[in-house]
Image (cartoon, rainbow, N blue to C red; front, side, top):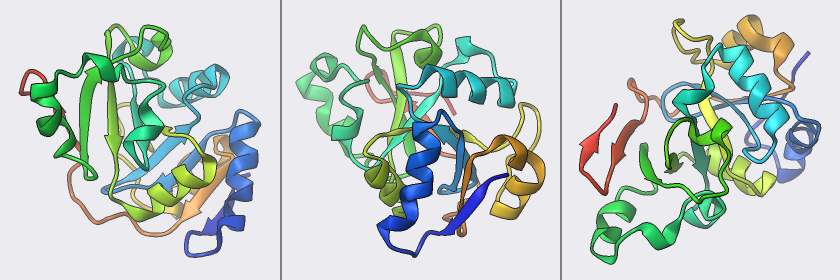
Length: 193
């Protein structure tokens, strides 16, 4: 059964989240629009649990969410972002926009799918920023639902639908956005969602 905390509590309140992540667990937390499901991106066992729970094929790739860009440098090949595109890339953040950026060559397929890019977001939503800082890692971030079902928008709905598979759930409201984050490729200008 998932444990929960109030996100207004001190960072010690994140100790259960740290334990969950350290033990290959999945966590759930409010994002800008819906509850997110996540885990440490470097933890292949946890990512595979997440893909199985979501019933999501690996080839689609996943989004990473972070408190700041520096948390993403183990996954994004920063050297492949041209100087003349850097403003258009970084002007979106922090905010509710996920960007498709060049992936480092060592980023595993279970994160990037069939692509040589990776979708990443530096969020402005403070509860998630605090969580990523407390865990000292970006998080795999996908909507809390099984593929084909509507995304869950409350901690209680996550507990009811997915609680048996979630090691830790953060209490608190979402950011109130109706739509999930946009996904764009700032190097090509293409909007993917």
